[in-house]
Length: 387
Image (cartoon, rainbow, N blue to C red; front, side, top):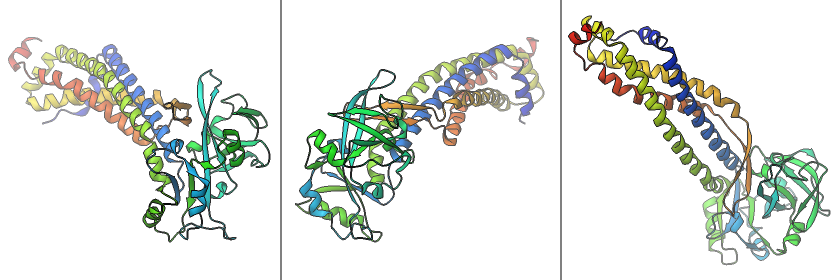
């Protein structure tokens, strides 16, 4: 026979001070957990949302990112008219050679960031379908003009519509602001490819080539073609595959976030344990009465576990509410030396909320297990004598 749930709920309000302190500790742990996972989810989303379905990225063999890739003009000319590549109505292939540079710049908060600047040709707007101008206009390739992602607006000196931005050896005029579906492109500056090549003294090379394949094209066959042809010798990946690989930093941050939350959880478990031990000690006679009424050891053990779990879940819900204000909060991630600074937003997803509540339940069960076991160690006679 199990004890009714209202018995446990009522007892949560008997020791208000200790229960409130324990709930507060668990809530803080859960809030940290939610904030850490929201940051990881935002970073992961910013990386993965950059890909466009149907797009393929070509890189030099043996590299893990476009920052370390080098592709020559001769290589581009050798493959851009392959039949597998999708074409515009006038027959021009949807092939976008791109130069990805990084420049050090002082942010508004006085940190030193690596601002990514991407050199493109007009065809890029047809390859990157998620990118669209939301303020101003597209740059004129014949002028020192640029467009900037919405995530870096006002984040650096000169990063505003109509302002002048000093990058490299030139001063560029910001004539447009673009969005890219929340992807990492929104942390970049886009300029004319040839102007950027001239500025960086790389007149005959690119970092990557983005292409659209024809709907009936076989990606595997195309990949073998560009890899085996000695004139091309490139590695082809879908953008989804490429950005999945680039999300390694999010995976590492997730481990760090879980480690921090785990350490804090130990303290919360001990707080819950102390609270439940105090509850067992104060209710020894009550436990004896329940035993005398026919409630078995298993029912009483489960009852105390339910009580600690109720306390923890309520505290977990409070922790989620405490962390909700970070949802949508904008921040930036400074990667390793070769990685650009990436701006992104915190994302508190339904999955994170569920994980947080399960995390709090785990804390409650861990903190209530030993006290619950102790509650059945005293014999019925001894328990009743303590009345």
